[in-house]
Length: 230
Image (tube, rainbow, N blue to C red; front, top):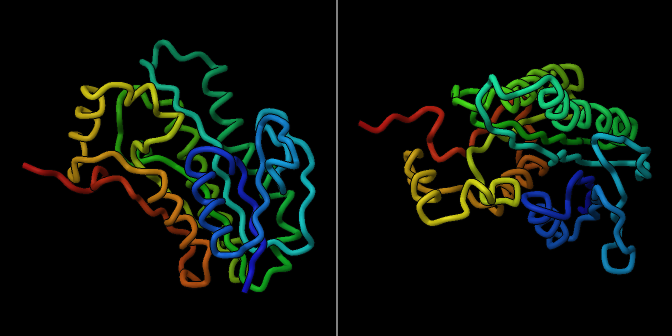
């Protein structure tokens, strides 16, 4: 049965791969972009900027919502200023809150809706230079668990918390063979995550195959959060 899905940030990175996968399954997918798109070349795409939220045009019934926008600001704590923390929080948390509140009436009309949000391995595994992103993504994890309880039994809410994944946000961390080798070597599985892998996990969490999964934080992190190799 075809479903209606909304992918915030569905034109790049994990969101783009997720959009493509869902459309291959013949689902109807609405996407958003921070910049206006040509409706002829990018149909069903609306403009939405988490820093300046606007009203979205949504179908009467929505079966799933995925909020993909994120940030990677890595630097020593003493170099962060309040605006750094504020921007990360606005994009990662307040943007998600706004979209969920807008979509809630449509999600409530679905027989079994699913919300997927994104965190990071750095929340569970303390990492230097990650204080701002960890603070905002930690808030997302708390939000997801609270909403999973509040929206049960009709709307499921889950979190995907990956480690470093090969997207445009992480390009500067992987822009040389040496950097990539070091980054991969930090993981027990000795590899960098691919966006297609995370997108497939998100697609799985949207599907009825995961009808009994809610309030969970799933970690495609190469084993980084809970494996130690000696």
